Length: 114
Length: 115
Image (cartoon, one colour):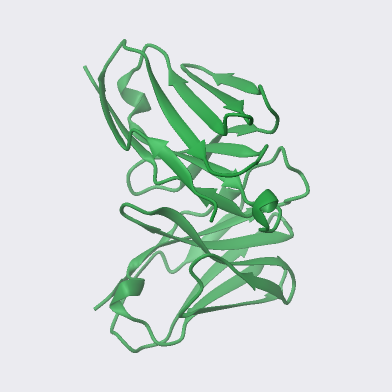
């Protein structure tokens, strides 16, 4: 299994509080991604990174920011959490140049915002 | 907008039967991926399809890609209970102006195989 660790695995917080989710990889892959999964929507890309300090927006980036100061860590921050951000968040990694290799996913973080 | 549509979204089938899940996408792409997700778990890669006419098989599952029709199929042969899961297809968005490697997912097909 790809070495991807997401933390925390579960979190309950209140509206308006800041929240940071961490994705840590041991594969030295260049590309890292944050998705959210909601019933009826499949997975939607929030932000992605193509290298240290190189990030870009995905399909549903509003209300989220990311940072990548080291190859192995990709942080997702909700500056002021809202109930609409209650979701399951998945981190994924890939060496995108190797097209025959799929993205590998972490175990997810279940985030509830009350 | 690149759209990826799966059907059916829910599928209940009996053990031993065959069925096909369809994945249609709205723009040119020659990279398509199939994933499996068990309840409460992560996504597991099943197949990577990288060219028109590509066919991959693993056990009772076979995936194919027709880039001209913008269609991929996941065929299930003689279903068993262990295949019960949600199956997602995902398309690389590069040909739609996205970055290489960015995936657009279908909504998933929840498969339930009953004895």
